[in-house]
Image 1 (cartoon, protein in one colour):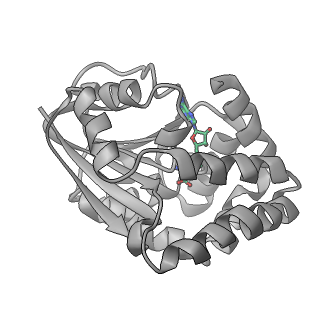
Image 2: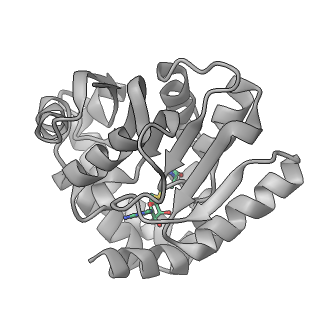
Length: 229
Ligand SMILES: C[S@@+](CC[C@H](N)C(=O)[O-])C[C@H]1O[C@@H](n2cnc3c(N)ncnc32)[C@H](O)[C@@H]1O
């Protein structure tokens, strides 16, 4: 499964950023910024962004802290990381991008003050293990922040269901040339635990002294924050 995901992201890496912006009408930037704010950014924080992709969260964290040299981004897909490195060069931000699996992070315990993952946790084979691994490399009292899709309720639900099931894979397919990748991405979003169900998953990792969830846009996405114990 992990290998299939890695290959899928390698196929769509070139058009991934454009796809995100078009498909979310730019809203993904707002949500990503909210994730960074939720992690209480301050200068010199040692910050690990997992499943960083092309580096959006790492760049926002660098901007929010003002210290890009203490930000590290990891991803297991080389073509996504290549784009992240090119962007870092263009922005002249000395962020370190490294190829690694979030299920087996190549860092000692307590290396970081913050760890984040945006739209990545639902793609890993073993989410509680990934959360545990992220918490392991963060010092006690540090923050693990997560942004992930949910399932909206109320009036917005039928409209969003139609958009994400029917329109999103088609538009994603036109942009990337890989409709199946976008079918998978929306399907996994509809079936991944969100809200209180995800908090239970955080509990099973036994890594957090406290955890909380915040819905975005009626539950289309959620922000989660765990304080490492
Ligand atoms: C939907 S993208 C999100 C990228 C970025 N965080 C963003 O929000 O734009 C998911 C990323 O997770 C990465 N990924 C999935 N499983 C992973 C794992 N086990 N270890 C590291 N990266 C992983 C993929 O390669 C892909 O770049």
